[in-house]
Length: 71
Image 1 (cartoon, rainbow, N blue to C red):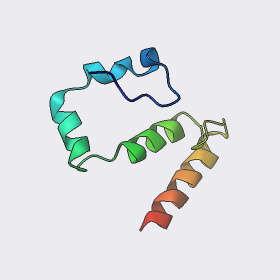
Image 2 (image 1 turned 90 degrees about the vertical axis):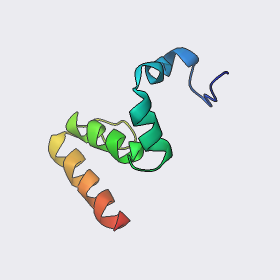
Image 3 (image 1 turned 135 degrees about the horizontal axis):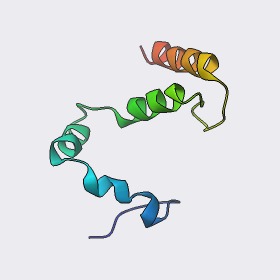
Image 4 (image 1 turned 180 degrees about the vertical axis):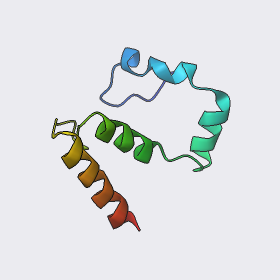
């Protein structure tokens, strides 16, 4: 079954094949928020949600503001 890749090339998404089934199930059941996980990873690298380098402090502040807005 082919992936629905949208604007991404299949080779950019091949990492999904190595994700444990347990994690994929948690995502489908909304027990794991991949959006939040991705935002946290970007912030830990100093990037904002658009992938622009803003530095660690601004990235963390932006992440916190996004979390606060979700509540």
